[in-house]
Length: 324
Length: 274
Image (tube, rainbow over all chains, first blue to last red; front, top):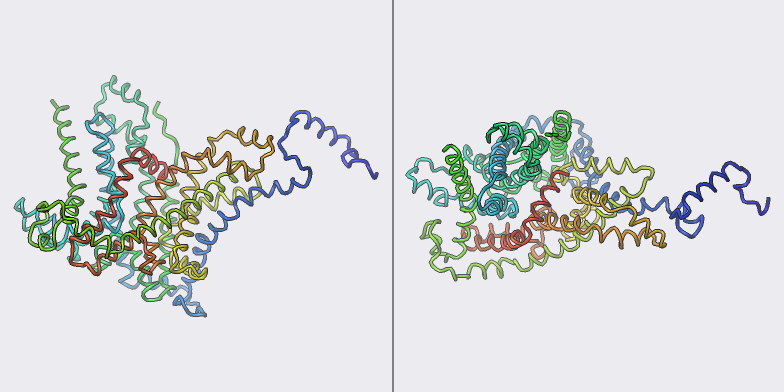
């Protein structure tokens, strides 16, 4: 008993262990004996300690706190938080100033369809033989890389009275089309949504182009033998094969339309009816110290994004499209 | 005949699109070389009379605090990128090379986190950063950049699958521990993923405005984007100086783009679809 190894008590296990050892004689289980076994099992946890810790601290804790704050009247400083139930949510959907930001995001949402259409057009024509292809591609994509503040300033300069756009209209004899591009509440949101198209079209374009170029060239050749023209190729080859990426762009468009911030903030500061969801939330939370109400706004935004993503996953399943 | 017409239409549309893309940038470039008086008296389409007039650039750089801003951006980027790479690679290593209790939960948490847009949660994140005593510190940004970057983790997960497991096993037989395997085998083999992450993350950090705007009010800590935003105040009507500031901000990105085009395209398409 004193010296017998415990494994010998059960001949079956002993045999199993032995045959195991024979089959994999160099099972890489460290060399230091038993002590390392439990340590080894802990290894993945050591590697995940910091990443998961930061994920919980910086993503999940804020989300949970946000739900809690949204049910209180907290100002961000007070030691005590009074629970007010759904009052903040009622205010989000009844105060006209709050409701307007949803309406403003519609401009950006509609603009993102324009943006996708333009991107799809250029991705399609540049996927066929074109001279100076890389040059066009570079020009169309580069604005996406520019700092949002710089873009805001570039377009303030371009749209200001007597700026670039006015000069062009004047030269073309279209003076009567000249507007207060960012000053007139009826026009400002169109201008800002236009800037957003200018900024983000390149990303859509490059994503679509990448997807189109991954289509096997033989498919085109075969379709040409069958007498397909460019439109047929677009309709029956290109469109079906980039459907997943269009679906993805669609969710990005919705969450993007709701989280517009930089360009209107730089260009108008949210004045003239251009206040967006994020501008208003930031103003509430950090200028007016209405953390409770701002959290309710943020929760609503988060829920909309989650619902839209969920619908997208249901409607457009991410199957691989097989053309061959 | 129809082919020729569509081909002409194609080039016409490309030229028009290029003009739309480049004209606003060109006018800023024109403006940045004009004197203050010239800016007011000439039209925006008129090229500057003296392309050698760098007065505005000097003003933007010195009085606009841009040198310090570049320093801050580089500091934040340097620290955040090292953190992002280590965190992304460590997560990918643990999730791809080990089977352990809770693995599915961790994967699910990361997947769920991709659905939470960062801008929505800042109201509450602010309280946490403030509670850690990091408000108005560059480490607030470093922590947020490295701790909330799920896209990079996905890029590392994609790439680590391509590293053959036999490499790890061979090293283990030689007696290497997991830390050594991670640093000497996994990290060096993840170079393409690291390059992709450095490029996308670098551009994202350089362009980020929202976080420094919220967390870094001190003038001498501001990175490039909030420094440029400041130009709106004191130089509000001096568009020639604002123009120079904008051009200074764009130049590093333009140079990067010209040299690394292929990697940038690949990085953004893979980053966006994963």
